[in-house]
Amino acid sequence: MTTLAIDLGGTKLAAALVDESGRIRQRRERPTPASQTPDALKAALTDLVAPLVSEASRVAVASTGIIRDGTLRAINPQNLGGLLHFALVNTLENITGLPAVAINDAQAAAWAEYHAFDKRVSEFIFITISTGVGGGIVCNGTLQQGQGGLAGHVGHTLADPQGPRCGCGRVGCIEAIASGRGIAAQARGDLAGLDARAIFTQAAAGHVQAQQLVERSARAVARLIADLKATTDCGCVVVGGSVGLAENYLSQVQDFLAEEPSVYHVEVFAAHHRHDAGLLGAALLAQGALE
Image (cartoon, rainbow, N blue to C red; front, side):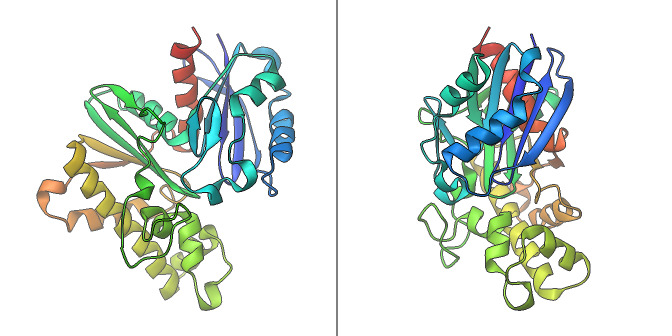
């Protein structure tokens, strides 16, 4: 059976057909609607999947936020704009006429990356650093979702009690410091108003403040990894997302992690599936949920 997989992120929407062997074909992508209203998202999803739906037997969507009973929720509503409480599964079933399942995008990506790692470790962590910071945890070969879908939301653990206020309401979350949105929000002077991509470009060109913003993000993620090692004794950590996969970012995370006591050291890898991990993970999970 072919799965129509959709990745709903804070900045982009992606869709593709995924066959039983995990092969992606006819991948399509477009920006997430700037207005972030239910009607705008429904229209964007309809346009995105229209050329693909006739070849699919089911729909699997990986989405930013918390998925509870098929409805989109969030710890940080800023990442969803006006989409809080959006009936995601019901909307996609109405658009496509196919059965649908939905899961948090980082949890989906964790499942795909765990399989790509050939399940060589029993405790596995995936972290995505993009518009926000999310994560997925595999424990004893089982993806952890939690009774309310909260499991793996590591971006809302504390990084700096004196840091910026996060959209979730806490002060100093990892997400408020390390995410693309967080990096941009901390920019001052000639960097003010630039997005994370532009700030990374400035950092590569030697801009001191831009380099400091990127380093602060990488250091916060390294400390998060040390905390997760202490909590789960994970065998490895895989990092993805537009920030996590940015050039030279992961090497900085690894260098900062090396400064921690050796008991907290763990191997850190870039996501094997790069930006398609969410699509593939959602398709993998749909194989079990809808068969």
